[in-house]
Amino acid sequence: MNAWIQQAVALIKADAQRSADTHLIKLAVPSLTGIDLYLKDESSHPTGSLKHRLARSLFLYALCNGQIRQGTTVIEASSGSTAVSEAYFARMIGVPFIAVMPRKTAKAKIKQVEFYGGRCHFVECATQMHDAAATLARDCHGHFMDQFRYAERATDWRGNSNIAESIFRQMRLERHPVPASIIMSAGTGGTTATLGRYIRYKGFDTTLLAVDPENSVFYDVWQTGDRSIEINQGGRIEGIGRPKAEESFQPSVIDRMLQVPDAASVAAMYWLEQLMGRKVGASTGTNLWGMLTLAAEMRERSEQGSLVTLICDSGERYLDSYYDAEWVAENIGDVAVYQQSLATLLDGGCS
Image 1 (cartoon, rainbow, N blue to C red):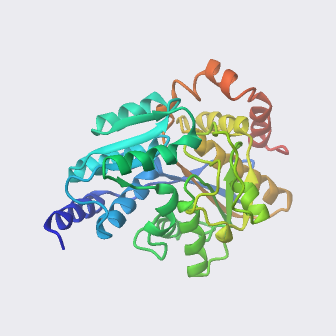
Image 2: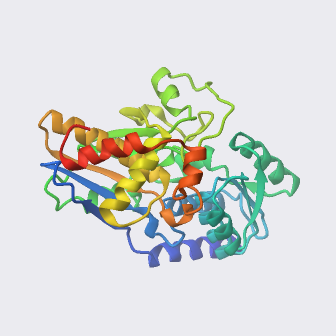
């Protein structure tokens, strides 16, 4: 093996060895008697999001396939969190990094990419990201990481400390150790693929609910089986949803899907902040809305059990967007009706 590749792989593996697992937080919602809610806090990774796991896997995959060598420029199409994490690993092994992202991406994410030595290349719409990244990689003889193609295959879904294995390990001593359901939004589809495959591989009696925001085709693709569906509009919930069914999205491992209004995702963000005193990103809000929808259904059926979802990243990245009332009013709309629905659930009524 090339000595430089050996060194790069060793650096990434050493970084993983130094990293502790992320916390599994139990929410206190007294009105949901017998239903336990958990949040896997992926915001505690060194680069602040779930995408840290993905970026590590993508770099190892590309290095071991001989696609990244000394001096190779790495290019990624990302609205922010994957770009931040990939910039971190690119700096670690000493290669240039360019992130192709929509111009409207949160400023905090742009600054973080640049902090790790990456460069941002802007496009006007999310639908332009892939082609722009592929063109850049061709022009500079670099490597297009292409998270939307390789996410589902770069991660070892059988185990090896992946997120699914971590969740079930951390749940072992809980009242309901095998979750009734795990809830996850899809961006690349890599995490839902890992979760769904691991559940089947281990034979757990757990369902996988995938939640999808507005302006995304994943729900329709899952429902119809037609992977050719596309829309010419980008989403408003950063990091999740896509205008076309990327290769990494694997609908066959998903048991159920739920469409979540963007205003509901933002309302759920605010609900969690009131409950925990912490800000989270809007994709976490999408996850939460799905989890609380399931919890309400379980309560109506007098069922007990546990539900698990993820904190994808911190809300500190979105102070100038989702946590800005004027921005939300202009870009998302009225969230009050969804806030009232969640307040009713929290008070013990019907959601």
